[in-house]
Image (cartoon, rainbow, N blue to C red; front, side, top):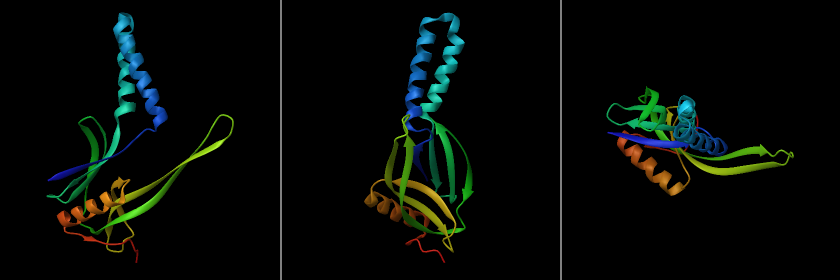
Length: 160
């Protein structure tokens, strides 16, 4: 049995807006200018990639593997890793802050609290990210479910 955890988009919102604009321009070029059809297809393809590409994680319970991937629609590119060395599962609370500056030099920031579900090795120094959650209750339920299915211990993060 496999579970696919779709994580965040690769590109930030500003690039997604640009991608939507490229999709619209590509469709207009394809529909109205028959001599510019190749250019329209190229612009459309670039826009689709920018808008729809995502990161994700697939956990395979039968083979005890994990795969980080970049995916667009049903195509998921990545490599499988064994999780045999990982004996614990934990939930980490992370405060993520991103900063930006306007053209006038005014700084703005965005803060998010993320609950990160990870696998840990015996010393709890090495981590494998599974997924990020906004709600702590959902993250705890998912961590308990994964611990049960993978036969791992659900612990508090405390490196030795």
